[in-house]
Image (cartoon, rainbow, N blue to C red; front, side, top):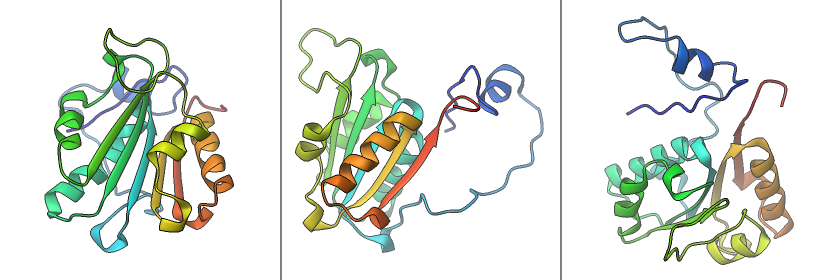
Length: 176
């Protein structure tokens, strides 16, 4: 399954969503760098923090964990504007029922009636509540818009997390 969110000033997403048609041929290669990857041998526990379509690579990690049969504890904190904006909502509900995978949502713009998740942007208090302590040395992967990623990563480091264990991937408009 592939997921692409169109960003108005995005370098690639505008082409993929607006120009690419079924049957078009592309040359693809693996990820450049490869540091934003979790495999069973990396271990855990693992904290995933995503905003918007930043959940896509985090979902790949969750799916890998499930497919491998590994029991590494995972926690996902996923920020979306609205309930309707939650990508993979049904699959995340199923994963959250898995022993060893905890899924927490925050909705920053509006919440449906009866909402029991968070209702604000990710902040220090939320990270303290969702994450493991720095003493437990979780592996951390943060992906989303640049501002979210920088805020989350710097907050986790300020809370004592080892910067070498906090991996980040960000996206945004060109020049942003």
